[in-house]
Amino acid sequence: MKLSNKDVIDYLKKASEILHENKEYLTDLDSAIGDADHGINMDRGFQTVLKNLSMLEGKDVGAILKAVGMYLVSTVGGASGPLYGTAFIQAGSVLAGKFEIDEKDIVKAMQAALDGIVMRGKAEKGDKTMIDTIAPALEELKKSLSDGLDLTEALERTVKAAEEGMKSTIPMLAKKGRASYLGERSIGYQDPGATSSYLLIKLMLDVIKEKTKK
Ligand SMILES: Nc1ncnc2c1ncn2[C@@H]1O[C@H](COP(=O)(O)OP(=O)(O)O)[C@@H](O)[C@H]1O
Ligand SMILES: [Mg+2]
Image 1 (tube, protein in one colour):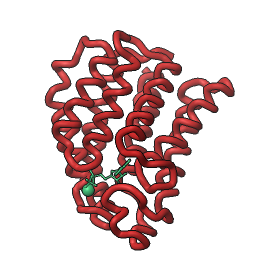
Image 2 (tube, rainbow, N blue to C red):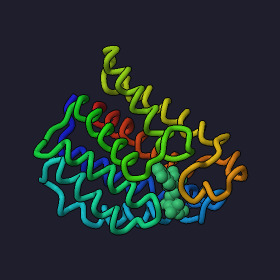
Image 3 (cartoon, helix red, strand yellow):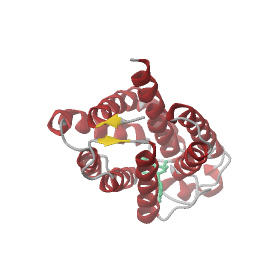
Image 4 (cartoon, helix red, strand yellow):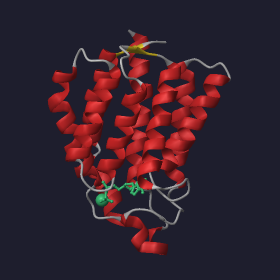
C-alpha cells in the first residue's frame, strides 16, 4: 500500500474538518480538568493548516508535515501546540524527500512523532496525556504489521488500541500539564489531548479505507 503526497494533503484537509466538528467536545473535556480551550486550540491550528494547504500541494510528504508542525507551533498555543507541532515536525523530518510512503514509513513517522512529544513534554505512559493514546496505538501498529496484516487491518487494530488508550486515561491521575494541578480531582475524566490524538489516528484508517474503496 502506497500513499502519495496528495493523500497526505487529503488527510490534513479532513483532519481540519474533524477537529472543527469536535471543537466543542474537546473543549468540554478540557473544561473538566483544564482551562476549556483544547478544542479551540486544535481548531485554530488546523484552520490555519487548511488555509495554507494549497501552498503545500506538490511538495514532498516530509516538507508538508514539517510545514504543518510549524503552523501548529505558531497558532495552537497552550501545551498542545508545541507538542503536536513537534510531533508533525519530527514525523516530517523522517519522511523528507518522499513523495510516496508505505507502511514502514507510517511506523517511522509515528515513532518520530511520539519521540518528539516525549522529548518535549517529558511525560510517560500513565501520566494522563496524549501519550496514553499514541504509545499503545503505535505498539499495536508495529505488532499487527509484523504479524503480516495489511495496512487496513493493522490500522483497524491500531484504532482499537488508541481508543482503549484514550479511555484508559479516565481513571488516571494527571501527572503532567494543567490537569496535574488538580491532583486527585483529575481522576474520572477523559484526557482531552488523548482524545484529539484518537481522532487523528482514527482518521488515518478512514482515509485509507476511502482510498482503497476507489
Ligand atoms: N507534558 C505533556 N506531555 C504530553 N502531553 C501533554 C503534556 N502536557 C499536556 N499535555 C496534553 O495537552 C492537553 C491539553 O492541551 P491544551 O488544553 O490545548 O493546552 P493547555 O493545557 O495549555 O490549556 C492535555 O489533555 C494533554 O493530553
Ligand atoms: Mg487547555
